[in-house]
Image (cartoon, rainbow, N blue to C red; front, side, top):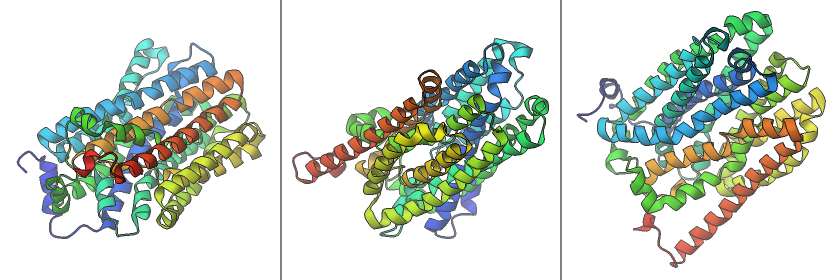
Length: 446
C-alpha cells in the first residue's frame, strides 16, 4: 500500500510469511485493550485520589471530586469525534498511520498529566490543561479502534464465537489491575504529602511506554496479508460516517443500548465506590484499591466464563440474563455500599463478577446486524455511543445524586441500564424476525 506508514511497512515485512491464527490475533487485541484501559483507569483513579486536592483545592473534597468527574466525562464526549477524525485519516493515509497516531496520542495525553502543575501554581490554567489532556485521551481512544476485534470474530472457529468475543474484554480487568495496583503501592508506602507531591505522577508517566509496546503488538497484526485481504473484501473497510448512518443508522442506536447494563455497572464497581469510600468512610484508600484488585481478578475469571456460557446458550440470551441479574443486584446495592467494610467488599466482588459475565459478551453483540460494507465504521461508532451513554457520566451522576439523596439513586441508575439492555435486545429480536420474514429487507441483505 503506497499510503502505509513506515512502521506499517516494516511490520508487514516480518508478518507476511505465515497465516495469523485467531489465538495470535487475540493476544494482540488483549495487549492493545489493556494499554487503553490502563490509561483510562489511571485517570479515573487520579480523579478520586489526586485531582480534587491538586486542581480543585478551593472547594470542599466532595465538590472537588464532582468537578473532577465532570472533567472525567470529557473523554467520552470526545471519543466519537475522535473516531470520525481518525476514520478520515484511515481512508487517506492507511491503518498504520491512524493507529500509530492514535496510540501515541493516547500515551502522550496520559503522560503529560504527570507533569501538570496544580491550581496553587498556575491557577485555573491547570484545570484547562487537565481538560485538554482528557479530551486528547478521548480523541485518541476513538482513533485506536483497529478492527482487530472484528477480524478475531470473523476468524473464530465455528461454535466458538463467544469464546473469542470475550478475549478483547480481558483488557479491562487487566488494565484496572495494573492501574489500581500501581496506585495502591504508592498510597500504602508513601506519606500523604509525598503521594500528592510526586507519587501519583508515576502511573501517568509510565503510560507512554505501555502504549508504545501495545502499538507494535497491534501493528504487527494490522500489517498482515490476512488483515489486508479483509480490507480488500470490504469486511473491515472504513466508510463515511454519514453514509453509514444513512444506510444502517438504526443498528447503531440498537447496538448502543444493548450493553448499557454492563456499561452502567462498569464505573460503579471501579471509580464510583473508590470515591464513596474515600469521601464517606474511614477506610484506607490503598486497602480498598487492593480489594478492587481482587475484584478485578474475579471479573477476569467471569469474562472467561462468559465465553464458555455464550457458546452454549448464545451471546444475546446471556446478555439478557446478566441484565436481569444486574437489576436484582441494583436492589441490594445501597445496603452493600452502606454496610461497612464487609458490605463494600461484597459489593466489589459480586459487582465485578456480574460485570465480567455481561461485559465479556457486550462488545459487538449485535454487530452482525451491519452489512460487511458498514461493519467497521458501524462497530466503532456503536462502541463510542455505548460508552458515552452508559459509562461516561456514571461516576458523576452516581456521586452527585447519592451524596445528596442517598445510595438508592445508584440502584436507580443500575436499574435503568438493565431495562435499556432488555428493551434493546427485545427490539433487536423483533427487528431480526421482521427482516427474516420478508416484511422488511435490511440493507445488509442487499
